[in-house]
Length: 135
Image (cartoon, rainbow, N blue to C red; front, top):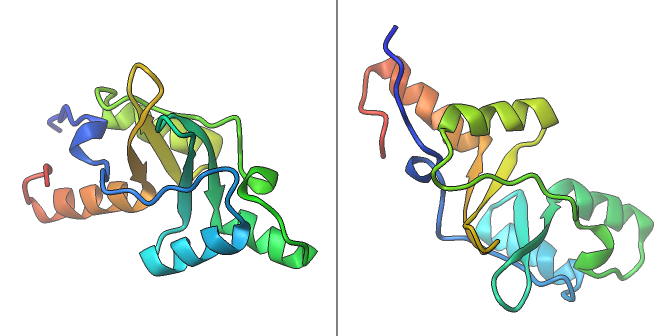
């Protein structure tokens, strides 16, 4: 079978919703619902990635019934990839760490995209149909 060299930048989404660590979880929850997303990258004032907030983090916080900030619930030790990384390497990271999204950062740590399980599922669908793999 022929191997394709697809990079993360060929799959990632670049029109991202983000939040700041100081925002309330209620504000983040609204962003997720409006944007129909399950993950929100958390960035600082310079656009550098500082964490990720997932829909599961929100559910845990709702169970606590306390007003919390994004900083209280976000994952801080985030696994990331670069735009130039191979797609198969990114998929391997997601499988290895059992995560469903992977923030894409540049050399300075600025968030430039997000690649998700859905992106890889769409890639698989296109491959199975014999369609071009790039979007």
